[in-house]
Image 1 (cartoon, helix red, strand yellow):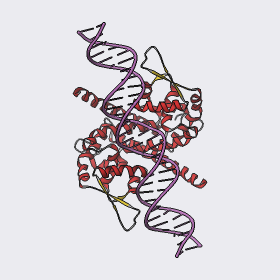
Image 2 (image 1 turned 45 degrees about the vertical axis):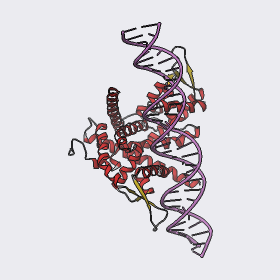
Image 3 (image 1 turned 180 degrees about the horizontal axis):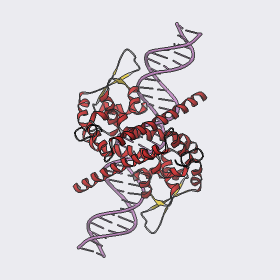
Image 4 (image 1 turned 120 degrees about the vertical axis):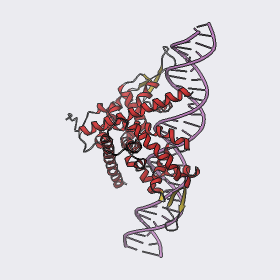
Length: 168
Length: 168
DNA sequence: ACATATAACTTAGTTATCTAAGTATATTGT
DNA sequence: ACAATATACTTAGATAACTAAGTTATATGT
């Protein structure tokens, strides 16, 4: 068991080494992963950013922009811009209903639907490379730990949001 | 032990759930981490992007831009832009030598050096939040597994770079 | 019923990052 | 010595994200 420092797991200096910082490590993983994936998807004129939205829409289309934003983990303005690009590229269409005229529903075009067969395996391939030499159990552990970090950070962010709401 | 699918750990559909994708999880961790950290650093007029460079320079200044880029994990054009901002904000100075007139060495200003005392603990704090409820061993496992993923992806990227060099 | 609040999306403006191509300086092979 | 190559940095242009503030449509409290 490591010694605690002022209530912390490690002293501040420990994190001056980026290799010890989970934030840094996550950034490098994300960028490397993205870049490698994009090598494949760009041959079908799909950027890494667009790919993220397509992946969600392959699971489930006909959802609103807001729902899509949440599931992809992006803020709405990001989604607006991304969807403009996807619409222009002929990957999605947007439909309004009279039921609630604020909402916009997003649908994949047949072309985009077909792309799943080609593009989805590319992600599996990058995953395979990323986890080379790791056991299934190690991969699962990594996923679980990352999810726990995400939950921890989300909880704290929510807490801070509540505090600033009180002030406002 | 999980069944294998066409030589892969999982079938392509498995990754259509973003929560199973290490790329997605890493992105969310990175963004949440960054945002939380920036809440603190912005009160000292340091953005998350700048913070990454400062962290490295606190460890070691007087290095070249190229060395800095490598250690921070950014491409050089990114570093150029970031350093312009840091210079304008009075955090760094750049010096040329006659020894090799291509190189530019980066030095922290006294102000930036002092900031370490205030800003470095903020990172430790976010780390503490991020790893809440995890044992020291779990944290170490997470770091180790992330580093292994990084190594795997770097290896593959290097391999692809070599191949395209041959073609060129 | 109507003022106020909330929800869904958009716009504007900023920052961070990348790739590809260009410039200046140094090193190397013949 | 000098052409070819490599190194260090910069510029140009694109994409991806964000926050803050706006618009329009719906829901709610009195």
